[in-house]
Each structure stands twice: as C-alpha cells, then as structure tokens.
Amino acid sequence: MKLDFTECIGLRYLDTVLPKDDESLANHLEPEVLGLSQKLTGDLAFLLSETLTSTPVGQLISRVLIQDGRVGLPLELVGSAPRVRPRFTRIDGRHAVVATDAFYEKRETFSLNRLASRLSALHDEVLKSFEAAVTPYALQSWA
Image 1 (tube, helix red, strand yellow):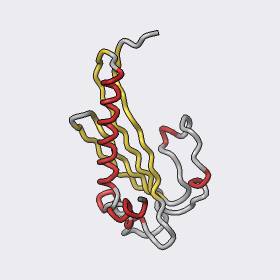
Image 2 (image 1 turned 135 degrees about the vertical axis):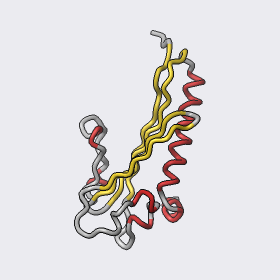
Image 3 (image 1 turned 180 degrees about the horizontal axis):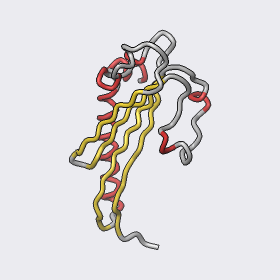
Image 4 (image 1 turned 30 degrees about the vertical axis):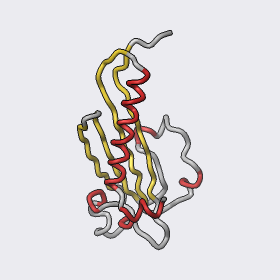
C-alpha cells in the first residue's frame, strides 16, 4: 500500500506541573496562565487558560488546566489515552496540566521528507508555547 497524500498532521504534548511542598504554581507558571487561582481561597475546581494562534507553520492551541486534587487528563483523552504513570496518580494537590496541540492542515502529495520537516517545525512551536507558559525558574529547576 502506498500513501498518496497527507491532509492534516499534528502533535500533542501533555506536561504536568507539580510544585514541591515548599513551592506554589506561581513559582513555575507565568501570571498570564494563573488567572485568579492564586488570589481566591477555597478548593479550586478548575481554571482553564486557552490560546489559539496561527503561526507560519500551522495552528497552535495551548491550554493550561489548573486544579486541586488528583492529576488527570483532558476530558477528550480520558477514554483513549495511555495510562497515567503512578508517580502522577499519587499526587493530590494543586497542579497544572499544560496541553499543547500544533497541527498543519492542507492536502499535499505525500512526502516523508516534507512530513518530517513539518513535524519538526510544529515541535518548535510547541516548545515556544511551553516556554512562554512557564517561568525561567521552572526551566532552570527542571534542567
């Protein structure tokens, strides 16, 4: 069997941000995605920050979900995603899930080289988005 064309390609990344006991999410996430989560009291059901951008290489959707409780997956992935590693399921506290989708939609004759190039460019956009959502402190502490 031979592929004739591609119509849509994309990447999805899920990153969990779990602050240490002596830290808060404010140490790890930029104020733009924290919303009012640091200013209101009580148990946080959820906070969702979502940004959709068109880039030269495709569309990018960046979501940051902050909640109290156990780490979970975005609702659209609950039934079809692989199991969450036990080190994450044991956590029960305030955390964030950074979910980033990047995709390119256009019907093109199939080319493995072009596909690899597009995926690499989409990955670079995801990385830029992630680095915009987290603090320099977070990047340094995770290095």
